[in-house]
Image (tube, rainbow, N blue to C red; front, side, top):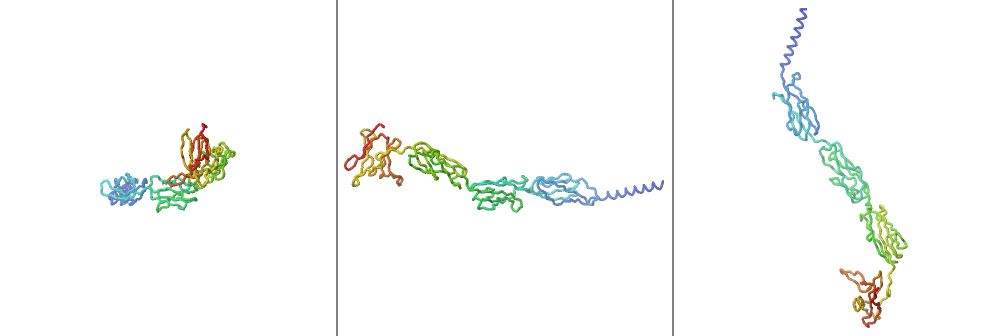
Amino acid sequence: MKKTLIKVFILALSLLILASCKSSESLKALKLDKNNLNLEVGQTERINLTAEPANVSIPEIIWSVSDKNVAEVDNTGLVKAISAGKCIITAKTKDGKFSVESYITINPKSIKELKLDKSSVSMDVGSSQNLKLTIEPSDAAIPEIQWVSSDEKVVTVDNKGIIKAVSAGKAIITAKIKDGVLSAVCNVTVNTKSVKGIKFIKTSLTLQTGSKEKLQVVFNPTDAANQNITFSSSNNKVATVDAIGTAKGIAPGTAYITARSKDGGFTAKCTITVNQKPTTVNSNILFRKKGGGYMAVMVYEHVGWQDLLYSTSDLTIYIENSRLFIKFNDVHFISGGKDVGPIVDEYSVGVGITVKSEDTGQILFKRDRTDQ
């Protein structure tokens, strides 16, 4: 029993001596497992601290950062990236005798994906659109973007993503990071300009029986590709229309000429009023005096009053729509240096008119003034 107690005492004494020897060792240095660290904005990573010698207890450590706008660090060495830049993380003992540093580089968030707001578009020749590019994550730094068209004869694109249709066909627009691999594409189909609408230049027209006039149609846009039109009349007994839009008066009345575009089926209407061909007084009689003499034309607008108009050798007198017309076929009206045609005077139907020879005074034609 006595021997057993002696052995226990010796063992305890040995352990005490051993512990005393260890505690007597002092801290030689601090070490970090990461002397350089690269992070992206928003990321976190822990820096682990060890001591030399390894069996020395680590005293209280104070962590600090050289620029808190770039990164933060807590009392366990956990580093959080705040903004792009560089800073130094320092771990030192409370008494300031030992310290160690880690050099930190914070990079902007890297882009994971590029997206265009349209994966495909259909356009008419000459039109433009703006493709909008977004990035994921949305708070990543915006890189330099290159815009490329697979066929600039079909569609072009500028450095802002504005595409312009040049000619009919198909092409692919690609937005990609310069010197990078990420990209986004949009498939573009360019069509010839389609018709948006049509209209007649004249929406109403008056014709005489037997007379004709070609109706003019305007397209919207004016350079639409397919400008084919079909024409029809609401009443062919009143007015007809041919394939190129020439309307003809058939009989007194009203009809509607309709134009329909083959592209889009847009329509326009023109109201045609047909009047009976006017009665002509001495129709097409040319009052000529032998030997090439001329006639003086006098119009009686008021009783006893005479108006000497023109001297002519080629005269036509007719009534149309309750009006009296005198056409001086060989007396032309000049405007801006251009001949715009014979002079035509118009009067109420009851006006009197006299045509007589200037040479002899012979009355060749006379219509007395009436109350009609």
